[in-house]
Image 1 (cartoon, rainbow, N blue to C red):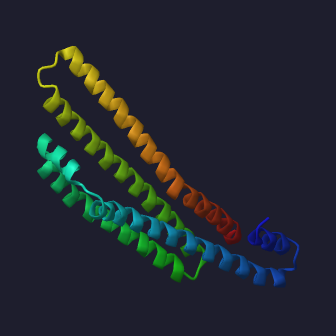
Image 2: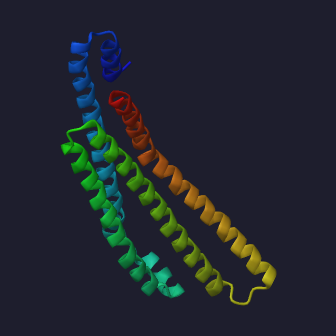
Length: 202
């Protein structure tokens, strides 16, 4: 049983006057937990944006660049990032804005509204990233098949596209599972806080 549960149990057994004090204590703890969770959502989002480009600076990407040049996807990759990065920065700004809103809120109702807003923002962020990842995989797969199997029969092309689709599905599933691990746990904790605040608000 954590500290918040102990507070709630003690609160149920107290008089009305003491309940007012405990109610404030429980709200403060829920507020603190929610603020901490949303801060971690912002930090993870920031690391997710910075890490890939940091790795590109650390490791040799000439081989990957050569593959994109061979496939004629250099311009595609450039414009893909031109579109993707500003969108990710926008969501990062929303994460920070949600964190600031929850940190400075002073009412149960407003805190509950900010929790719902944060959950919606994170889910939209995950959906958007999965959509971009799927588009990228499909484009690379289609161009690769056309480049490396230009004279293949219809049967061979169907097999190649089928394999590419399965592999893309597996990769998207892995990415989704990673997001569930990174953000899913935090969102579940945030949902629990929301439910506790809902009880206080009754």
